[in-house]
Length: 443
Ligand code: SF4
Image 1 (cartoon, helix red, strand yellow):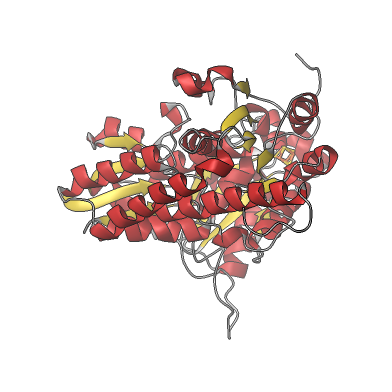
Image 2: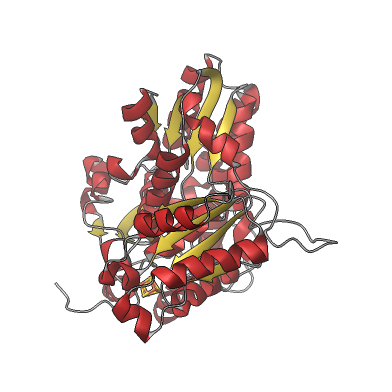
């Protein structure tokens, strides 16, 4: 057990909360804490999504840290209303405000008492101290807390399905929406930052970028016939779908990110069951093409050794997919908590795999330097490991700060898996070519 973390393989919890709030229509985030927290999170998100990201802060000082941040938070709510005129303000706490024990629900009540004539904005709140979680737990906890605070039940809408996303790219959210709609289901997709973090250029300035799940849609989650929740590696207490199951008896299907044949089949089977329709032909054809690609590439991939790292849900799904291709996952690593990917061990294939949980990039670097590896798959923060070891890095997940196009990365579904598969195969072929004489013709 190490005494320190060096280059953490996870990010801070309010970053996950800020990402979820970006997926709500006309919503502005306030971080209750110091300006540095908001700046750090903005820098991370802007570098990845290449879009403007406004995050307000209650701007703690030494005085606030000692005597409490109520007045700062009330003032920041007022400033945000004057500047952005939002429908929703999403408050997330930070390490400092949690450490001094500010009671946010009491401060929100105080705001409501002082502003009884106001009907908007609605103020939502989540508790996200980073010493109790990662950006991934912050992400799923905020989905859970928003649904807890907004969902109501009236009449069941038979065709409406809640889709509680994982940390998908904006392009992947669009793919999920298309797939679910192709089963003639009506998805309530949350969070939906497919436009707010991947919009077009504007002729006119918008204080809050257009797009996102509306409050009306969020309220209607309690009327849905079922939920599909992608918090597969998280405990049920962080699952919005499980909350709706307990409160309104709405069936919940916890699905892994659909990458690879097995996990895509599970997702499509769930949709088929819910819609009582067969899988549309367009997807059965995509599936066949993916299997064909597996066959075509097996001679290049069989026995190659991969190290996969990143957030636990993505690592779980990518490892499950690689097991189908002949690639040997020699190490699966995550900054997620102990137990978050050890479920992989339930599959015989992963008996020889080193599982690193709650690890940092230094642990992964150590592992790669002392063991045989052919390819690395993970975020751009693995770049240093790639440089030191001379192994190629396939960039996926969050963050990707040293390449363009992270918002358009699409690895979900049969076609998305095919994209990832081709990237991996071509990288391995290129590596083989680089070790050959210059006059090779075909591989
Ligand atoms: S102090 Fe806590 S909340 Fe703020 S940036 Fe650091 S880890 Fe995140």
